[in-house]
Length: 385
Image (cartoon, rainbow, N blue to C red; front, side, top):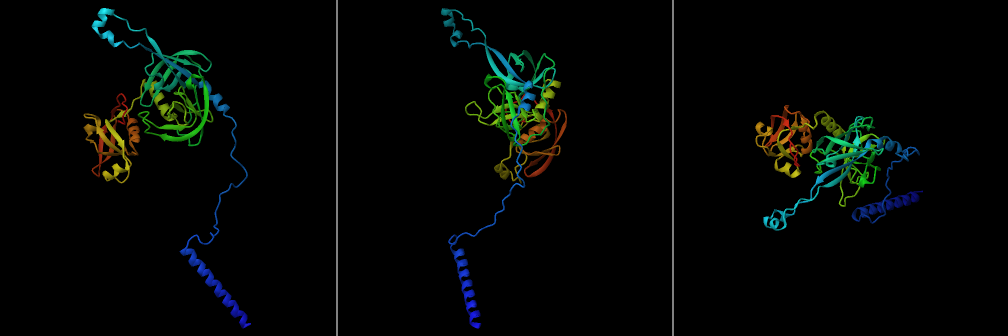
């Protein structure tokens, strides 16, 4: 019996030595031994159900199509006068020559009916510099339209036709969209006629694209092409969520990157144009830029939040208040400034004549200044406030 236990002990000791040797080899030469099995937790659906399948968006299209119109504009032009006609010697021998007859340049876009009594929302660039504007309703009727007002800062315009009983579109609630939501783009691409395309919301709050002064775009992969400008972007219920405005393209055609003005911004502009004939915004006379990590480091800032004052208009509201280039503006009336676009929107929302309490940083020291807001002048394509 004692011999049996002795043999068992020797076998156990040998086994321990072998395991110890293998452990040492695994540490000294990783990968020499076969990999050990590991437990992996895999998430699995708890039931056999699946997401509901939607086979058609016909109801959404049927609901919104009667509210989208085609817009044709024209502009009188003259053939350029030949330079030789300014030469008195040429005119002496060949006599005066009249300029060529007027010609008409045409443009095509889309629009959205927003009221039963004839108001139509579209893009400013669709009707810009137009001498005549014609609206084609979905039933084929052609109506002359008058320009109620424009807002180049957001690229929006409002028209009106002398026709009542129209089919206005239903506005979606502000900020009701999420990335991944299904959307339909409705308009008249390339002049082929009213068209519906399908996509999703690719991104929200796209800014600093250099398209408009005030930007807060919806990005979508629903096909948007020339002629869609001013048309409707609607959700799966047929409610207006945006005004189709621009595309990113190297060829002029759709590449799956389109931009629409959100309904929240479009509605603000629409109401102001109808009420005042224009959009009234606040302005303090500063040029701003975003704070990059390099700028934050050079100014010894803790983060990149805020807007750097790159320029101050001499004699403007900010100049009179003592604001200087190099100041970092971090809050307006207690509301934090995330970047230059946020600052533009905060100041623009203030009524002219109001007093704005600005919190800023100058040479690493916090300061507060009060600026009297004025009315924003005609837009310039700069990040100005």
